[in-house]
Length: 78
Image 1 (cartoon, rainbow, N blue to C red):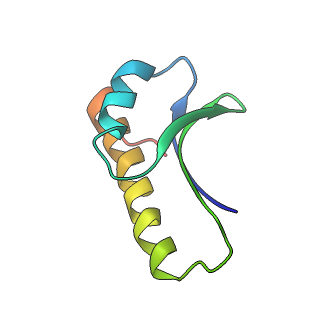
Image 2: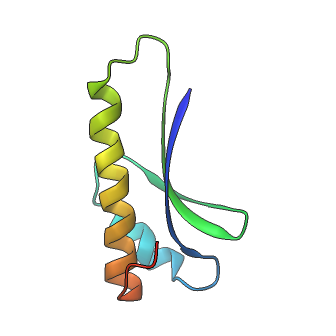
């Protein structure tokens, strides 16, 4: 498996319900918390993975994280 992660905020600094609504409008990725941070994460099986199957989700995850930061926090810290 391959994981694509993009940080959104520190835990406790963001309304997770509001951030989930923003991230939920994107095709892939979901919110997780790990190590005191909130991330947008997408996972895909590595076997038979084509580069295009990695490139597009990577852009979507990065855009979803930036949108959650911007729309919920009003800034882009990460």
